[in-house]
Amino acid sequence: MPSGRVRRISGPVIRATGLGEAGLFDVVEVGEKRIIGEIIRLEKDEAVIQVYEDDTGLQIGAGAVSTGRPLSALLGPGLIGTIYDGIQRPLRALFEKSGAFMEAGSRGEPLAAEKNWPFEPDPELAEKLSKEGKVKFAPGMVLGTVKETESISCKIMAPPGMRGENITELLPAGEVTINSIAARTDAGDEIPVAQWWPVRIPRPVAERLSPDEPLVTGQRVIDVFFPLSKGGTAAIPGGFGTGKTMTQHAVAKWCDADVIIYIGCGERGNEMTDVLTDFPRLTDPRTGRSLMERTILIANTSNMPVAAREVSIYTGVTLAEFYRDMGFHVAIMADSTSRWAEALRELSGRMEEMPAEEGFPAYLPTRLAEFYERAGRVKTLSGGQGSVSIIGAVSPPGGDFSEPVTQHTKRFIRCFWALDRDLANARHYPAISWIDSYSEYAEELKAWWEKVNSQWAEARQRALDLLKKEQRLSEIVRLIGPDALPDDQRLVLLTADIIKNGFLQQNSFDEIDMYCVPAKQVRILELIMEFHERSLACIKLGAPLLKISGLGSGDGEAPFRERLSRLKSDVKNNDDGALVEFERAMHQALEELDRSYRTREGL
Image (cartoon, rainbow, N blue to C red):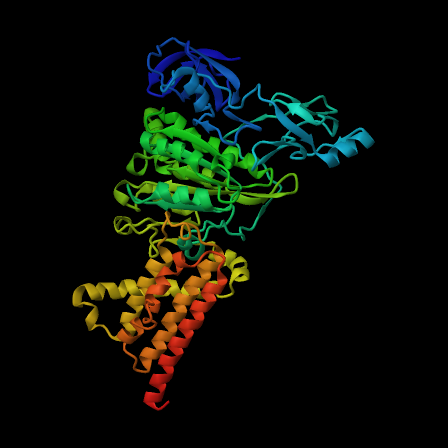
């Protein structure tokens, strides 16, 4: 293997001579402690290396040895439920070995080599092989399965790029380790249970599919107003304390993805600690078991080496593509891409590159595109369907959405959930602004939603239009007060208030309201908009808004406007009868009011 000597040290960036024969992006071990690094530039006989560990104490003249392979992730059974750092070192195993503070050069196997897994060969492949003695080899073909957790079965697949035309030998059912050979080809190649894959290279797929199926999160403001598709990309920008991490936690817990990968990229240590302690205690609402049985955590806190922060998102998306290729729907939570971009900026400065706006490197948009474009809903090489959805948090300084990371991110994502500080301060959760947010997936998801409720598109658009109208009226109200407005405009303010409190706001501590099924989401919004339209008709006939506001009160009952705001927590998810009964009572009251004023007007 090529080897050389350290010539210059600038923080995490090292220059070493004698590595001219090494490959770009090859992994390098530096110094006596064998600190892990990666070659990011080659200049004749000299290599520029970024190291992923603390290089304090490293001296000029120390050795640097190339391993001859790019930075890769080990893919196989045992990933689920594990907590890794950015270069796939298992943090729990390293903690048991060296304590709370990891020493430079610490090593840990990404997957437990000694653990036995129950292997079941693919029945169709095994039967064909026993009859014919060989089976035509195809990249991505499923060789067998391993029960990884109660929720996830890991498929052992033939890797792309292998030689050989036929599979001639298949491992029988029984206990295996990650180093066991699952199959052999007629070219002499062996296919192990666990396989390495370079993290910077996307895994191939057979075909990209249209993102026409939503990632259902149970959060009404997301699912109805700003939906995300499976295989889609979304950004959650917001200043400090606006709820980016909490929103990602809610999506991770409730969304209908099969596998969750949470990347804590450059976050504060105490915030990442909350994630690491909370996630194992969360219950998967679909199975009633621990959420960690379908979750992988990648932790790179702000006090960890900056270069490892840069590579952590590539490690995370590679693990996601591995489960996507098995036919699973995977959701990635990247928190936060701003800290990742800051790592790029620091490394670029150390390498003395020409800076672009606000000191970020000129290739920042390219790197963001490379990350977000690895999302998608696809047809896999084995013929199944899977998806990778990416939800990236952005932390603009001072909540300024015009800064470079937010602006460049908007170029590559199609769903923008802008967090509003005023909403967050008012304890409105989720604090997603209905004015600044948008989703470009709404049209593609329209057919799916109309199977749930044919009124989805119409109710959604009417509600959004009404909220924009309310924003304009609020500016007038601040100047002259609400009493100066006519009743039809005051009704807009009343209905907008019902939408905000009764639809957009959710209580994550309420057993009913913490998750809302799609059918109930649309029905609640439909009832609110129906109340508005019928009330507006009554106002045009002369009915005062005060009478409409109190409509339905009496016999211990609150008026309909208050009951509309409480439907989200009063009616259980599958209790359609309660919604039908409420609609009947509201229709009857509004029709009686309409009839009385029509009679008064002689109509």
